[in-house]
Length: 385
Image (cartoon, rainbow, N blue to C red; front, side, top):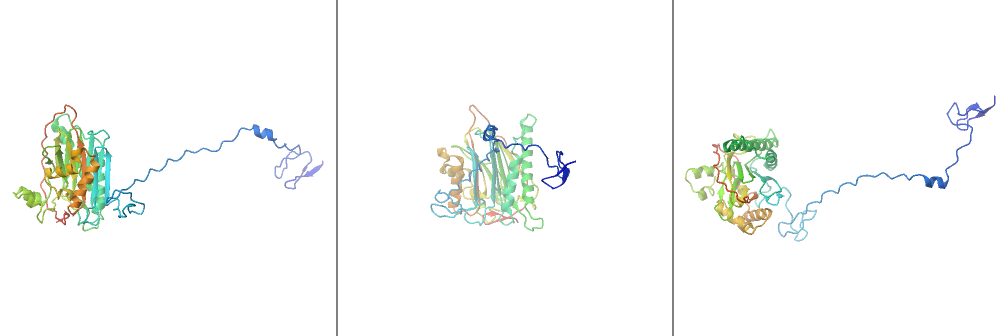
């Protein structure tokens, strides 16, 4: 038998073998001819792989200078006047809809902003809004972190519409009050979660919330952050009742002006936090039937205009009497407080109410409040005692 050698591995194989038994190389026959240019051109082109174009990252919000409204550059300084801009935590704004907005500002005296806010609103004006304000107690540790966590936790509880109850006004009121209390409990849990378990001075904060659904305004508070109703051209109302030594003095017969300017003016008797007494907010509802503004604010604002009509005057001066948007008005209220000294952190949140055509409602009675224990404040800001 004639043999030959595999050209690949050198193994001796039969001359008529078709494959090498050592490496499997094909043997014998004619090698296939290379394709011609015409045959290559006739082949279907191979498409390059296609990929979904990645979405462009959202544009970085343009920060404006608080001194001249110029653009703040990446280095944190105004490109027009050179003023250093405050940090995002020291001054931030929210405007979830055209009819709802808020501004939270460090003020002038304090070295950090311990106020916080969290807002929610439907895009349809007057349909539904949530305003939450927490004021961190200035002599407790990590209150700036706790207040922001608490505000956002309360907002999440209030994200869904308030319950309707069993169909009667009393039933709905009870159901609404239950949800507002649950929001306060959630805020309290969030404040506690930010506190070092071994801290001897745990984070704490006041709490105020307003929920506007159609013509119904529900509100709750713990401490001395406040909820106001400021109707156009009419007498305003302070809907919340402070948990404070000043409020106790007022109830004992002292004038508001004297109590709120005395040494215990900002001593609170209820608060959120690990060392808080019972979490039982003061609660109330009000049916609105005239155009106006719902204002939820910290004492950094009302310290300079406590009476509802005094606040209404400042609101008008900030643009409320000429139809300015709520974000512009809130900025004006913060500027007013800073111009008066900015002794504390300042938060102003607003929701605009316009009654539906033909709507006619009467005021509801505010829900009773709860007794207090003792909690002190200093330096125009909350502290324990």
